[in-house]
Length: 318
Image (cartoon, rainbow, N blue to C red):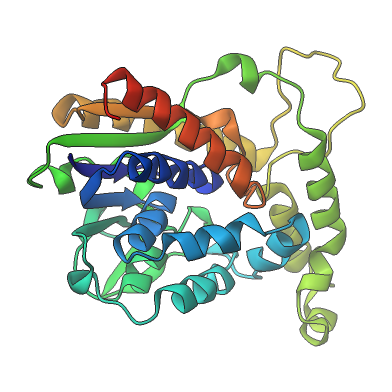
């Protein structure tokens, strides 16, 4: 069975893509083409380069404290987080690789912020393509690449089906990370997430070089940025001991922005699926984890594997 694989955007939920790929491997499926946006572009590149297992081992060992340091807050207006620490690890795993030399045809999808259109990255350094595709609006700064100011591929193409339309495959599989699960969305906020947020709020200043902090942190602009960072991780100030209204979630500024983007992406995805319907769609609920909960790799990988196995069994791929 020859499969073309499309991996959607969704932050830390993208770990589910690893579980899907594991399920395909167990069935001896040959992946003959990959396209991806954002985290889908990252996982897809590692699979295309045959380096996914090494990345999985690293990601599965991440703790909340390690993620806190990797997020690397930045005092810039373009994004409250830098991505270089994570990209350095990905570069170490990948080594110097060009997209055109990968054993599996691969496309990373990004968004040109100036031209307002999707960009398919199918040549050049793999790490540059990943960096361009993962620039989440307002969180990670855009990336200047070949004269284009590029940001997250999920802005316009959260499930990039078009790049693999011409791939010679028996089956096209799309993996969406924006599935609906209203009941879970209304549930009380997880205590572990609250503890991480409170720890990040307390530790933000310690993540910034102390020498620079002494001259920067007393300004109104710096306090504003740190406040943005504190809210950006999950968009809630804290989790109360008991919710007065368990039906309605408490949403902060970033969470509202993030949910708005998800709604827009859902609408865009429906248009994409109408134009380029996959043979099999694996829908990962957006409530599996929050966008920046990168310390939950093992759990989310298992969920992706379970969903993929159920979907593949439904079409008798074994």
